[in-house]
Every structure is written in C-alpha cells, then in structure tokens.
Image (cartoon, rainbow, N blue to C red):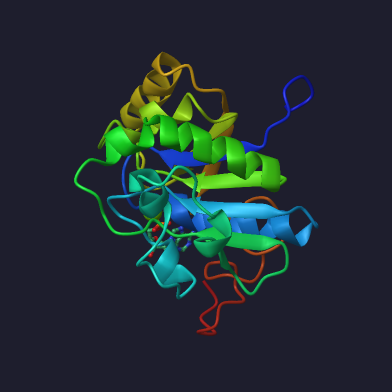
Length: 209
Ligand SMILES: Nc1ncnc2c1ncn2[C@@H]1O[C@H](COP(=O)(O)OP(=O)(O)O)[C@@H](O)[C@H]1O
Ligand SMILES: [Mg+2]
C-alpha cells in the first residue's frame, strides 16, 4: 500500500466511541516498535484521551502544550515521553482544550507532524470517532493514511458507511479496515472454537451436548 507514497503518519478511527480505536492503535504501535522501527504514538483524541491512563503517564504536558505554545520553536524531547518499550515513544494529549478541532487543523499541528515524521519511522495517531466530531476530518487530510476500526458486534453498517463518506470528503487516504472484537463462529476447524468449546461434547461442564 505504500509503494508509491511512503506511509509515515497513520491514524486509526472508527464511526463511534468505544469500538476499540485506542486499543488497536496502542497495540499496532507496540508491534511496529517491536519490529525495530522508531515509533511515536500520539494521543490526538483531545476530548477522550486515554494514552496517559494506558501507559501511566503524566498528562500535564502533551500535544496541546505544543499546539497552544506561543514559543517560536518547542523542544519535543521535553514533552515526548519514553514508554518502557524499545523504539516506542509517547506523546499524551496534554490538558483538554476548549477548541480541539481548531487546534488539530492549525498550522502548528502541520508543523508538528512534519517535525515528528522527520524524527520517527512511523507516527501513529489516536483520533476521535468520525460521527461524533469533525476533529478527525480536519486532521486526516494531513496524514498519509487512515484505517477504520469496525467492531463486529457494535458498529452499524450505516455508521461505517457514513464514516467512509466523511473520510472521502476530507480526501483522506483510507487504507482499509480492522475488524475488532471478532467472535469466532467455531466453524473453521482451526484454533479455538472447534472441538473444545461448549456444544461439541468436550465442554468444561462435562455435559455431553
Ligand atoms: N478486542 C477487544 N477485546 C476486548 N476488549 C476490548 C477489545 N477492543 C476494545 N476493548 C475494550 O473496550 C473498551 C473501549 O475500547 P477503546 O479502545 O478505548 O475504544 P475507543 O478508543 O474506540 O473509544 C476498552 O475498555 C477496551 O479495553
Ligand atoms: Mg479512544
């Protein structure tokens, strides 16, 4: 997917909240770092930030500090934090601002992404859901690619379609989808779900149903 245009900045979004964006984003960043790439994971979900909780970080300074600073230049090293995982650096959201969409569409955000892509092999951005606020539309245009997280039991088809429409309107480069929280149907004859589960005669309860 990155043959013609290298992908260095990537966001994962979803139609609605709680479909697993942050979970998939965090895990993807960790796996990427484990392959030896220098990764920066950024929390740009300024309204429901979770990165600082997940990694037990201090959130007094973060992305919003960079975006609201009036300083001519800002030392990213002072704000970006280590993760304890080799090759993975973290930028928490910082204090919640009154105007997230304006901040994310600002020139400072573009400048930040430019500086970040020069320092890291991959910049992965956690962003808000598409159908709630316009933040992701405004930022996705400035990212190399976007992936949509779809939750098997939760995302409505219409919601996913609308999210794709909005991404297209924003001229985002939508790479594809991650299906999250998939329940095995047990019919594949491989791995979990076949021969060991309830209903196949080997259940934990010993009941031969
Ligand atoms: N595949 C999964 N299996 C189990 N729990 C999950 C899975 N994906 C997400 N969750 C849980 O669902 C909740 C919402 O996920 P989160 O990643 O915070 O969603 P979002 O960022 O889209 O709002 C969290 O408590 C998370 O741990
Ligand atoms: Mg989240």
